[in-house]
Length: 265
Ligand code: COA
Image 1 (cartoon, helix red, strand yellow):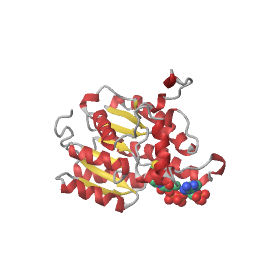
Image 2 (cartoon, helix red, strand yellow):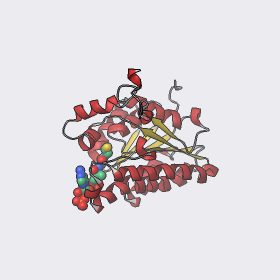
Image 3 (cartoon, helix red, strand yellow):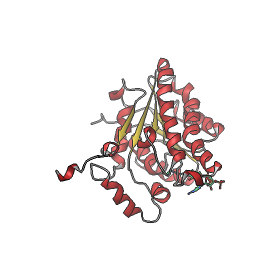
Image 4 (spheres, protein in one colour):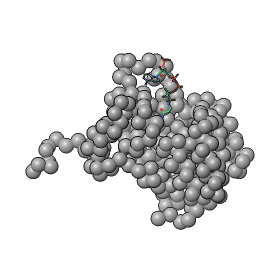
């Protein structure tokens, strides 16, 4: 589907790029020719993915950074510029989440997730802006969740923060269009990762995942390559007229709220 090395000579900064879905984005973008700068709080999370990209002949940089700290985020963007010459794409993938009823959620728990997801995304966009505006086009891709436009009982912090990132996506798309920067988002449904299993399906992850699969018309969870290919498409010239848009990728889950027992008719 893609021209080989469609991102040749381009630079992508990917937050949370060492593990889970971030790792899938990093590997796919590197495979398509991008030089990738991976940022994450945990250096151990980054090293393996960076080395995997390098072993495959790609270029990767690992930068320990907490997206909640503007000074860390600015250092990441500077390092990407110094090492690779600029920034073409920013994927805001770093996230924090855990299951907790709203009435039991501590103020600090709320703050931690909103800080990572909403504030962290803004800090990264803001810090990458001077570099992105030098490229034509600069691209920002924000990773949401299907519930960014709905509700997510059990993760009110994440639901509110992702809704904020959706509004941020649409607003920046308008404000920064004049600088040639496209701002888009992906809203993934169920794409299992070890981190999500540990935090969101504690106890019996297999049983809970099976229950979720029943809610998905496609009958299965999403594959990481499916998500990474959508990200690549949205950042590619094939999607050059798309901005301010959030693309849902969930096997039809968001539309599966039947009022009727239609399967029995
Ligand atoms: N249930 C209830 N409260 C929780 C919690 C849980 N499972 N996990 C964390 N918290 C609370 C903590 O108790 C703390 O609040 P307190 O100070 O009032 O006790 C607050 O959240 C911050 O936790 P802490 O572990 O100190 O913060 P941190 O900055 O190290 O971690 C998180 C941030 C909480 C988002 C953590 O889950 C994280 O690091 N996540 C990154 C990975 C991730 O979540 N990826 C997404 C997978 S779907």
